Length: 247
Image 1 (cartoon, rainbow, N blue to C red):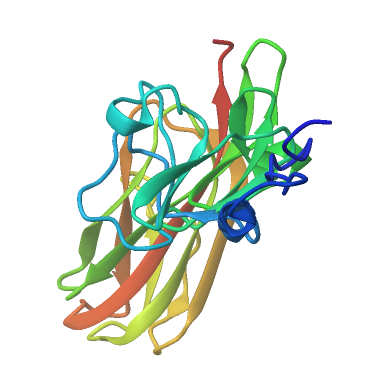
Image 2 (cartoon, one colour):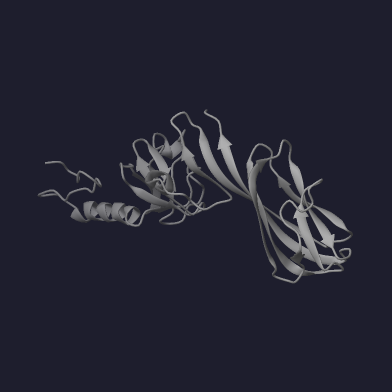
């Protein structure tokens, strides 16, 4: 009979064994590290100085020192020593400093959303990936325009080149002063994303357009209507569809 369990490698207490508590406590230490598995990070290839009891890390590639040969496994500091938990297929762990769940698939740790084919939330996400590495994705670029002044304001929101622009949205965060309303667009097309928007606080703008591509990065412009800007602020967002070539 083996001296450890097949799946979690928990040591058995053997017949006629002396100091059975040592083996029992070793099994408890391993279980304590494995149940609800979490790690502080996955970027370290060598042990940190002064670890706290129970501190755990997913060992990065090129492991060295006391972690040599542990790359891809979990290292837990317990009872004054590093305990190695050899990773097994299907294990799941939470990486605290990234707020991400990983799954062990073959020799790699892969984000849970990728394993399940889910679409994750983020400023830029991939919706589809082809066999050759080509991708289709969605993206949002955000910016703020504050202290509006004059008849026209060039904002820090820039339409990216070589992406399909689906539209620009906005919200008035500070009521616009001086002008009765505003338009959103780009140079030469000041109302591309709509005009006649009210300047009241919390006014919502959804400037959807037929998808188009700009050849060069192009700033979004806010144009005053019914006067000139003497104040106000907007939150802005550009919504894009991106295409990635085969790798």
